[in-house]
Image 1 (cartoon, rainbow, N blue to C red):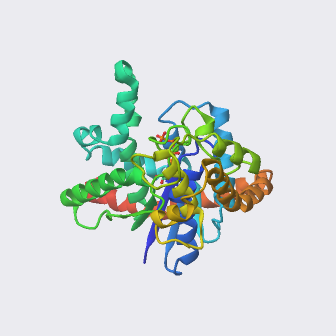
Image 2: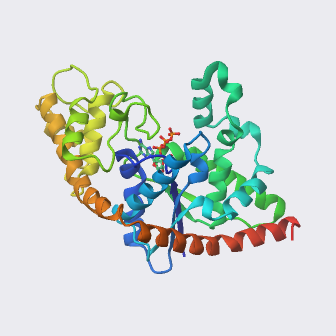
Image 3: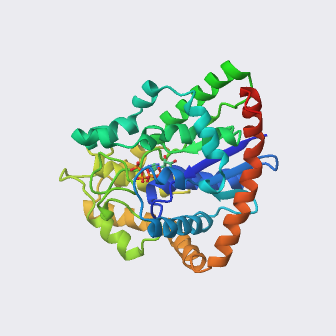
Length: 338
Ligand code: AQP
């Protein structure tokens, strides 16, 4: 039997990168799951507080993110959907794993190095939680005995860390106490920012026009795509290194096309070769809008239904606590804590 676990930070309405890189795959895995597969999807609010959050804003984002997970097609009868902080076992296992994880390994993580580099002379003030972010992520996955973890490419290194921690722990305390999970990377590995195509699309980027939110209207999608950074080279070709902006738009059309009319981005690009930049952008905006239109409609009816959202979060928390309790008991026993 498989156990699938993944998470998303409730730090804003999810964007197109989250959707194509992770969320869409969550739904696909759910819809294709055999009855003996367990699916757990978490709103990882303890990860969100590694940078300072306004309490009211965080509460709002948690609610919006939950509504969005339902709007994209997750079914709470099939998938366990829960807020991470409602299940204290995540934090408990995180502490235990912190006593296993080396600071040297954590310091070499790309995400940490990026944050240290961008903080420059202020890097001494970076918080411990940011360094230990991957330890909490390892605990999230390991506490539920996940066998498969669907994520975007940026999280692959953290999952490798989770496997190392599990294997190190098992080496000391006994085989099979923890299970080493497999990483499932979605075909749309990395959707890039619309304003800076060298960087990934992200919720935390200060420029709101760098990302398409899953709630954006047709008009907003059109205007953000129209303003997307491309280049002035004549004709359309696919070359992510020399034409990152144009290639990102081709990637978006390619990955939003469910019918898979094309075998590769190159093949799609040959079909688009004679388009003007303006027409390429219209094609991109239309492709995005087709995918987001039904999600937007479901979201707008769910977001007003506060009592259903509260009930679902409660049920999810109970089921996820139940799922986590077995691992915590095993770990405590193996270590002599109980
Ligand atoms: N641009 C992306 N392309 C493909 N996949 C992506 N993911 C995130 N961005 C892209 C995947 O989405 C899942 C949830 O990740 P997250 O909650 O960390 O989202 P984020 O947008 O990366 O969040 P932030 O706030 O912007 O964080 P920073 O700035 O630290 O990156 C994951 O599976 C992720 O791979």
